[in-house]
Image (cartoon, rainbow, N blue to C red; front, side, top):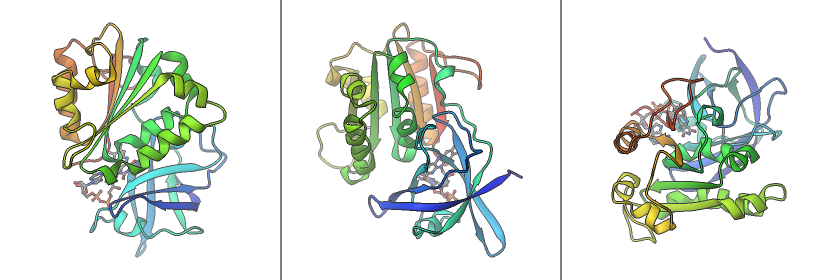
Length: 257
Ligand SMILES: Cc1cc2nc3c(=O)[nH]c(=O)nc-3n(C[C@H](O)[C@H](O)[C@H](O)COP(=O)(O)OP(=O)(O)OC[C@H]3O[C@@H](n4cnc5c(N)ncnc54)[C@H](O)[C@@H]3O)c2cc1C
């Protein structure tokens, strides 16, 4: 069983009836690479209920941030969504995960494809100056059902652009592309549909996705990962086969289902 450390909730923000984020204290011994995940747990009637959670904060920050779904009858999130400042939870001591910069081959542009809570590891990576050092252009392509589901990402992008330390780099290098599937919006459609038609790159004024120049990270449901991986494979991109072996793109499940 994972080794857990106790943490205290320091801030809770509700973004919609289905989504919220929270911050916790960070044990000084917890080291992680931006983009990794931990197990997050609560004790329920004497048993620990723990689930994988991407760390949304960057590894230089004093606190940890998480972005969460609220699953109505979910063993963890039906409780987690009622967290208040001062409550305690468990965080596993050994972060891991595939979405780490060192496993991407060099390239010109980095695409981050996220649906739903899949934006969480990118929130961490987008706070990392190395992301902007390694890639000339970074594209955050985020998909959701409704506009209301984009609120956390909207806030994140604004925060990054206003950031004292990296704001200049973000304003110069980060392109934000948000699309919804269930209501009218500036960009409409699933990310996979917008990729296959090259609509996404056209809208951004960029050349079609090409493995010579472009790199990608994908985080979302199993179905979304499969769809976008297949599209990238068809264009000649190579997926990193495992942690420590670089590829043209990397994938991580945001949830099992
Ligand atoms: C590597 C990894 C990283 C993850 N990172 C996050 C994260 O940063 N934030 C987060 O909210 N969840 C994340 N998850 C999912 C998380 O582990 C839990 O599944 C989620 O918190 C729900 O827990 P639960 O016990 O309430 O319900 P569960 O019993 O775990 O899930 C019930 C059902 O809810 C649906 N579901 C679960 N999680 C999500 C989700 N995030 N978005 C949409 N539908 C979902 C699925 O259909 C699932 O079968 C991650 C999962 C993996 C594998």
